[in-house]
Length: 192
Ligand code: 5GP
Image (cartoon, rainbow, N blue to C red):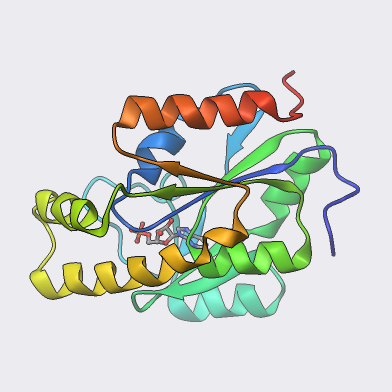
């Protein structure tokens, strides 16, 4: 089903792991009619993550049952874990004229595009792959093989920029955030 009958539109923020998507999404929260969509995942919570706030942490079998029941707008497997956007929440919010903010990886974006969901699709890109590697290393919590794998995935993701309406290079976070805000301001979003 397509979302064209809805008043709200999606704001989709995507890009490689480590690029700063989460920081940008945090800053967008609560602006105008933007509401963050909380995804479901089968990965284990990281220290500090809260069920229902950061993710809905589901057992694999429960995730699959929900997926089979058509409970997700899109879903994908990433680094061995399943991720999905709960459909009810997003549809409800769009019906109410709100704009669900989705922070998702590229397979999910492909599915949303195929289904024709209206929205603004933004790709956050690193200045370079080398820069991305340094950022992932700087997090200090990933073994070298995990970093190598994420870099490999990032190189793949960078090939799909054509899925997006805009690409924002995150060189300096404040500048990148300002650019995202400008993009949203220039596009027809209902504000109140
Ligand atoms: P992480 O495990 O680091 O929180 O997330 C891994 C990747 O999965 C990130 O690129 C994140 O944006 C993406 N992701 C999170 N939730 C979803 C979702 O509901 N659907 C899809 N397709 N990707 C998601």
